[in-house]
Image 1: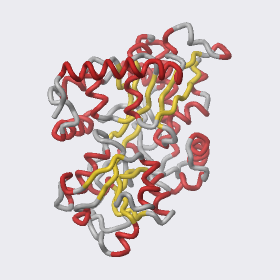
Image 2: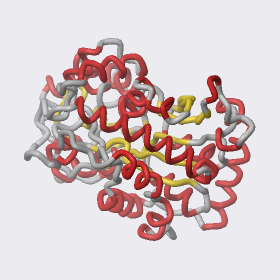
Image 3: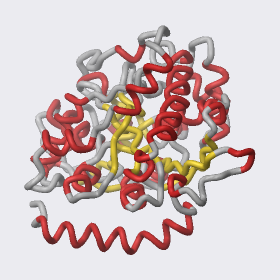
Length: 382
């Protein structure tokens, strides 16, 4: 059940106040404040939060490596976080300019509570063959204790957090096996830590993303039994967010979006059938190796990666459906109106201006491919 509005607001403001000195030390304050904006070479520093080691920031990394931000007079200062949820407080306090994070119930609860931030562009969505998978501990598969989705009953399944996209994805797979969320135990474990948890038997299964999925499979810890894209409609899992303070500098915010969108399009050019098999695939794989914990570019060449709309447009119907699910689960506060909070949170101003500058995208249309792709019972190697 959601907290009363007054209690939530007190909780939220307390969190912002407690976070402020820590964030100021880590982030050095936001760039849009003026005095701290100048960087070497006359560039303007823009602090940007990312989930540490995430391949879903590929377009951002590409834009940095190709010099697209420098073209716009911007120096991106990356600030790593262990989850997108931890970016909300510093973003709302104006101590982080931009966040590259997940679409979550907590994010929309914060907006409803008056935190000033804006979702301004797409960052990652699922396209075939799909970068989100259900993996099951190899011992359970080999022994026959796990054969299909119905065998998840009573097992411990890891998701990165409550109120994020993997939660409704897990529910969809359970439903395919005649189960509900009440039939499993869920454990909150970040994607990177799921591999060890599968190996030591502390969890039985996990909703996993690449490259963690392939690493878990190749290490012998788990078996990929299905991709969520096999059965479920694709989700936009994350987006680009602006602090209200940063968004007030419309010229700078538009320049940032222009550089980011060029990176998105370059990344999209590198994809073919959801993998880095396009003409720019080798270069993007090397960029990902530089910015993530994977040291083998060939791994990035063989795994399925996320899609992103090359015009940056968010998938509003899918996000609305996700929020409706969160509301039913009680992780979206009970008095939050889905349509109203979405109208408040999304702002296409900067995307429209950047798209006008760059013109329509002319490259491959892999990003338009839709899930689901096939029926699956979750019986193995999806």
